Amino acid sequence: MSNNTIGLGEASNVIEILEIGSSVKLPNSTRDLAIQFVERLLNSGRDYELNELIELMLLVDDESLHEFASICKQKIY
Image (cartoon, rainbow, N blue to C red):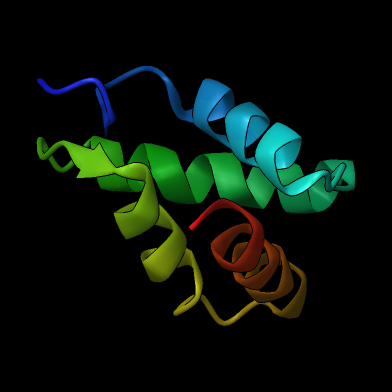
């Protein structure tokens, strides 16, 4: 696992890192959705780079999560 790769059980930490990096504090409902989304991806057994997770969040059909991912992409990558 490389330094930029996220492993299982770290979904809430991933979202916290993205919130800090993007300077966006998500409302609880959006944060919960983001955590569930990342958990589902991580449970697939594959490791993801942060930029991959952001790109995949852009595909989610939820306006607030899509907006968050867009801000993350601009500010972090």
